[in-house]
Image (cartoon, rainbow, N blue to C red; front, side):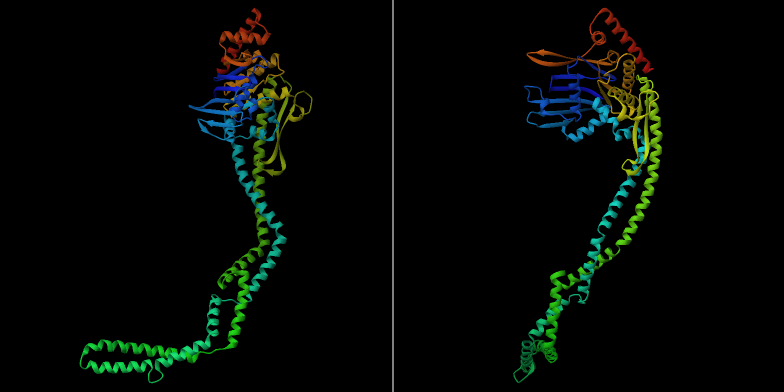
Length: 542
């Protein structure tokens, strides 16, 4: 509910604070006094477009502050626009974005003027009227199916569009696999080949060093083993006189064992050493094959083998293309059947909801001065699914007896559309935002019709706070809070003022609205209207 609105430097509104109340808040005043400007300012507080051009002449900024209540909690929205274009928005003192403000505003305020009435012609607005909780629950189930169906359809489309590319890719992958496989690589083969090439390339040097080593160890009178044997004999002879030398002699005996083992191993290595130029050429050729593969597939043989494994996996994936397509088509068929079943449920539920709502709205429309009007919300199956289901919605209307009903957008006038919008709000007010705003919904009305429109608005105000700009005394007389907007010249500038009327002032204002002047008869008539209005409001509460 809207509790108060403060407007600073907004067009004719220099500094105005308006306190609103429960029920029906009526705004009256002469044409051009600033009533619609006040509603524009309220719209700015809930995210409607405003610009620096609306800043009052001579001011540097405009500011709109609105206080809303929900339960026991108050929310304060402040929006400020400077001439430099800077736009600041806060909710309870915290900065928020314009998109968040719009979302907040949509939940708490519903403005209806000529432009907003045209929203009724949009299909999504029709669905918003007929989709109750049961329908929304089924729509959620349909949405899950529909989204899954879209995912699978996109996947199938991608698969099919890639068919030719996949065939080319498969041919290339098979060629790569064949090139690597034909080399018959073994793990770590490149390291082993490099080691063997290094050995064979230096075979002569190795053989020479081996031979010298054997000679030093055991060939001749002055080799290491012969010298070691002499040392041990000398120590053995000496140890007969001092056994402290036995430890050193034993160490030399162990060393002799190790030296003889090493000598045998070196000699065996030398005897087995076989330098083969043919083997070296063979190794170089193999190394060249591996080098060429490394340039394409990896820095080592192990990396090349890992790449071969990935290539084979991709080949398997591409070769399964047709089976994937078949599987996707099967899943799509299943989802389409499920979507069709859910869409049919939605259609039936919506048709039932539309029939009930149509009857109630048609009754209200006839009460609003169109006694022969026919109103019907129609929901028909569509050829394609959408996020809303598998149907389309439209409103058919006929204002005159004996005529065929046509789409509302083709046959309705502005005044008729206003009354249809009012009838819809009267029927579905419990589903509306906390505060409804009607901006001159009474345009073109008079007499009995004006009275029924007034009573309809009053009925809505029993369930929702209503703000209504009107020029009709019949509507103004039903106000719970009556606000009069006037403008005057102050210091050479036009200033708009908003005042809350007491009972005496209301009589005078109703008199002016009804007859254009205050007279004994018009005052009496105004009091009668207010008395009748009070009786009607008491009947609504009964």
